[in-house]
Image (cartoon, one colour):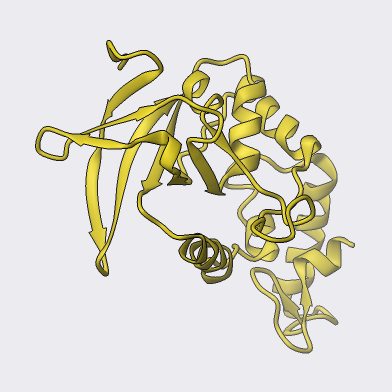
Amino acid sequence: MENEKPNRVRYTASNITQNKKRFYSLSVPMEVLSKCCYATPREEDPIEGFQRVLDKKRAMQIAHYIDEEGGTIPSAVILSAQEVADVEVIGKGRTIEFTINPKSFLIIDGQHRVYGFSLAKSTLRIPVIIYTGLTKKEEAILFIDVNSKQKSVPTELLLDIKRMAEREGSVEQILRDIFDTFDESSDSILLGKLSPREKSKNKISRVTFNG
């Protein structure tokens, strides 16, 4: 929602506290978000930077996913409010107001999503988490925690459920059928030696089998 003050906007937000750390959950229009956040790649700023270098190809893939495939990305972009944002919590903590400035928010997690969304033609609102009052040390710790505590889903599992999502290519379908035949047939020379959903010691995974 726009504000009467120049370059100020306000949005409904949820006030959340975890282990004495407070942050706000809200959604922000992409056209606003793209104007008020930034990232600091380590390569460009070895003193205070901690982000990876932006991969423009990956960002374009996100834009294509949104525009051409009708995709959605519900995971929130994590931001740290900077002093120039002049964040204010209004009312009973249900509304957050800030200044639109290119340096208002440091991106802790989600720089490729932000850039990808900005390239998309679709009009979107983006889920956002905003931390306030973090020091540079706390921002770096949060970046480490976000990127080290999360564990990606094994490629083997993703490959195994592609049929359910109806996203298998023709070659993948053939390889799946062959793999399953070897895995399930009682007279298979590979019986007991295959692992369809995860990596397993001394077994051939679906990813390895597909080559």
